[in-house]
Image 1 (cartoon, helix red, strand yellow):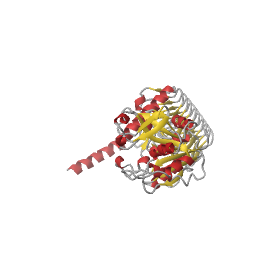
Image 2 (image 1 turned 45 degrees about the vertical axis):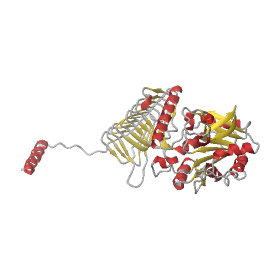
Image 3 (image 1 turned 30 degrees about the vertical axis):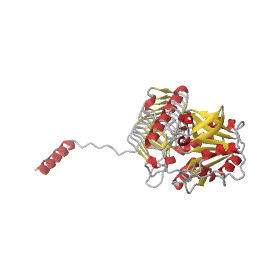
Amino acid sequence: MSTDIALIVLAAGKGSRMKSDLPKVLHQIAGAPLMVHALRSGAALEPARQILIAGHGADQVEAAAKDYDPELEIALQSEQKGTGHAVAQAREALAGFEGDVIVLYGDTPFIRPETLEAMVAARTKHDVIVLGFEAADPGKYGRLITDGDALEKIVEWKDASAAERAVTLCNSGVMCASATLLFEMIDQLSDDNAAGEYYLTDVPGLARAAGRSAGVVVCDEAETLGINTPLELMAAGQLFQDTMRARALSDGVKMQAPDTVIFAYDTVLGRGAEIEPYVVFAPGVSVENDAHIRAFSHLEDAHVARGAVIGPYARLRPGTEIHEDAKVGNFVEIKKANIAAGAKVNHLSYVGDAEVGEAANIGAGTVTCNYDGVLKHRTVIEAGAFIGSGSMLVAPVRIGADALTASGSVITEDVPAEALALGRARQVNKPGLAARLKAHLLALKAKQKG
């Protein structure tokens, strides 16, 4: 796409119907704020500029926006005086910009990049492009009155005639025009209306009055879904999950019970990957072809390579890298660790801040003791090492290639390659002491009851 495109994303509203102190655009679907979904759609156009209009909760909105993209520009709408007024706040940021501008809404998360591309393409024919949708229940949406793909006017429901109310083509509010024309028309907006606000929807009419043309691009109604209430947020989240599941299945992902698998906004699954029931993908996860994620596993900010097997009941935390054919089994937690090809961490273990070499084997109940209460420390387990069950590896520590630690050991020093390390006290048996101790305890218990 052309780099002569700017995005303006409106994210200033309070969203009082959400019944929350959190600004509306920061409510999440699939692990990302609503506004991030809108920004991601626009990012597919490779825009030269991106301006987010913040207002209510501006500090929170700006912080979340910068977490998503530190280069994102923020403009402040200190008073909420309508959508046209909101767009006007981007004027200074776009001073001298001569390309096209697309106006998106931070509470409308599902517009597809392909739809935005169609709007940009339609600009070769019309000066202003409005995104419309055929509504199953038009209700009180503004109606788009058209002649072919030309937009004659936008009529608000309260001002529409009976014939105009019968029209089902409705206005989404999303708009595309050159920056020059957009701000020229915004300068002509009036707040002479019941709400005393400046409406962006007046721009196409003003453009036509000035001898310019307006057109319509039509998308599926689901793309224009706006979020205003907790119930709508829940429904939108469900719609997102259904869409992601269908897309994964069509891409060749195997799922036995897709309705139980939870996706994040950026989940990537390769062809032939198998996902068992009740798997949760938090943000930042990619799973390569033919990997197998078994039931009840939770993955976040992790990469799983081809042929690896994860779970059941495994947790991959941020910074985890699982290489080809590695195995992470039941009730295992991995954090900020690199598990090399063919390595196994099969049972009831915690591996954090670690390097595990090729074909190494981590026995059940092993813990890399990575935290001293202040700092984190790294454990290195080299290729072919065998860590006996119940080993405590007190970092920083290195286990050499093909070394072995005895079960139940506490390892506090480096272990050379091919060495056997034992770090446990010698066992001592006291004949008859168990029976005498039990009798003593039972006597104490009886005395307490008496």
